[in-house]
Image 1 (cartoon, rainbow, N blue to C red):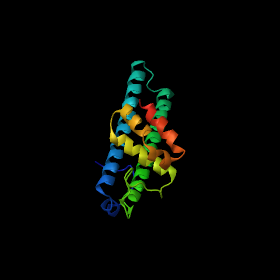
Image 2: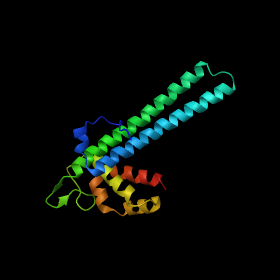
Image 3: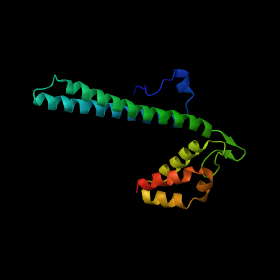
Image 4: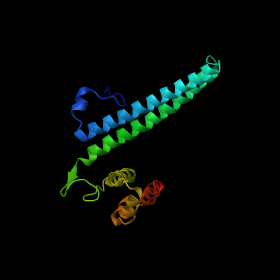
Length: 163
């Protein structure tokens, strides 16, 4: 698999942990899927226009531009999320006198609230695949209320939207 979701030199790849490498590969797979879906959609449009004898019209180029712009935006979201996760993983691999930072065992209070939001979100998303159980467990988490502050309600609504 060619990795082009982010630019890293060989020494940078050597410094990535196994978890970070898995994150990069997963993001690259998402990018590849987005591009494949965009190409498939362009093919459908071409075949539709061809069947109606208007394949050379400007409609095709306009629709393809829209598809490319939407794909580029989706890829940028995946790329940004990857960079944020890599940065957090670097921070999370550190620790204090109680051991490595992990939510809820040893939460990192040095993180900004948006970073805490991601930590708790990732914890609950990985905890279970059942959205109802995930929401119920989060609602009973008293540490999350204090740890997330004003972001608690936002995460609650996000987890509730999956139900």
